[in-house]
Image (cartoon, rainbow, N blue to C red):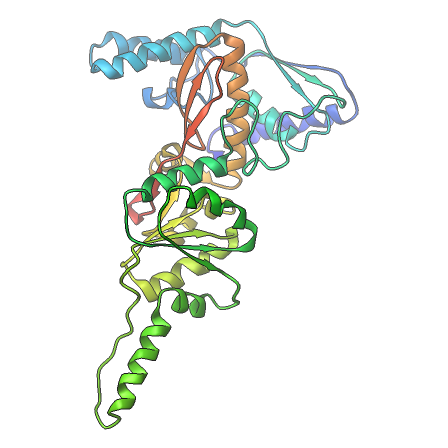
Length: 364
């Protein structure tokens, strides 16, 4: 994920520091780079917990003093103010990393973006607190993995239906079936093992059966011309799709070609893993995906140049943020996270809620 301002400076600084770390085990001291002239964020942006400044704290106090918030909003604003006061008043933060950590460059970029005084300690012998897979594995401090949270949001969206649910999956996602089946819905399972997306879609949506049935009817009276349009099976309303990232761009159009708007197509979060340009989301138009409100807001406001590796960067940012909140003594926080809504409570694992959103053209 690349924001328009300061991206080249941050990348340059991070590369210099990372280069020095490769040949030295010395610790790094990152000081606050706040300027008195730094412009305050929009009030809603401050809930993103992306960076911290005294200007942001003044904005929060001003909004609270305007008496323009309802009771619930005022409660959230006061919590936000208390959290920012604790975060900004903490004199030093400490982060321990392995010097051979594969995400080191991105972690340093994120640390500079936080705009907080932070000491980075390097230790090759330290056990890495980041798992091999940032998506499939649970990250330290969180209650569940990103994949598990995405499955939870899809399950929540489908538990109210009594109709059969079509699940299309590829082999690498077969292990997630048990998480869907647990909600006792009536599933029809279809493993994608074809080189033709069109043929596969026609088969699983019942188009081939419709054509075969028409042929049998026509054979009963070959002299009669009958107008025929093949129709998809009527007992299905939802189709959950668990495929490799590169397969969605062909599968979604193929399903729409044969099924039209008869189905609610729900993509797994893997559909977002190889998106680089926000406009590429239009390949999934009218389907649903687990994607955060933070990302859709940034797209609507044209504040994102790229979505490349945004899930990875968001995961690393939230891992760092949890450590900051704990070291600052924050008791609880509601965060508009990059990967989803983050609910932090001290002495408890952090929850992530990923909303299921419809991909529409007006998003752009």
